[in-house]
Length: 177
Image: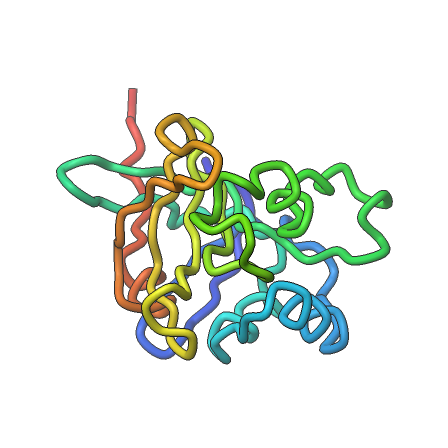
């Protein structure tokens, strides 16, 4: 038994998340402030996702890429000033960026960020929105922590956009043993 779950039905996907795993909804001001600080504009469907599933632990949490299965442990969140009020503060997008900042960019002089982590993968890698090719519709990539170096991020594109990424997630088969 997995435990209680909620279902978020996007346009074409069915995302199952663990009940009570979502953190408080980020305000429009918090989202706007984050966008201004990193000099990006989140896609509308990602903003809608954040407002419904801030920091959620997904049950539909596996995707295949390059003949490997990847497991999403948790979607990152925006907590703003309330970051110290939650044990999940480590999963805040801004905290995550501050920890790996130099390894997320290939230009130390660039203001803002073009790779924004949005989910933690098993083993320390991240799913990211990648604004380098298209600032209006970022692709989704995997950022590899062991391969990335300061000002030399190693990423691989998974999907063309966030909605496509949600659509490739599936629930792992459970052992009946």
